[in-house]
Image (cartoon, rainbow, N blue to C red; front, side, top):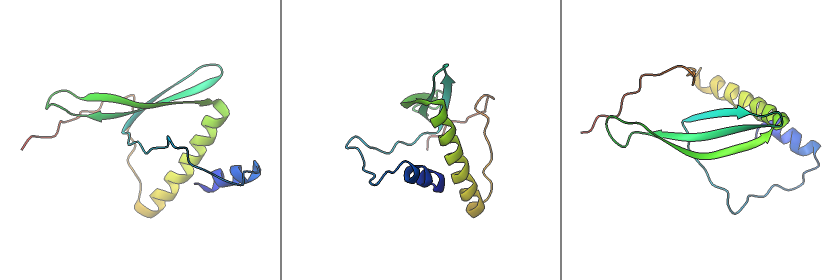
Length: 108
């Protein structure tokens, strides 16, 4: 949990954090977002190459949150990324809206 998230939990008088029985870890390597006047949606997906020519995108989960929570998530991710890059160096940015030439893994 990031420092900001911990501070938010403390300020909300949260005394116990539990994990849902449905909790699971999901790996994603692409995402897209959209917004309405009331909320923000973040759809998280995984791109794989089941064949040598065609990429497959499988949507894993869609998170729906208030705009205020989306800003808190943005800030928490920003803090975490800065901490990561301080330890491991800068990570190149991939603009999701620009086409990227992807090469399928070569079959051996």
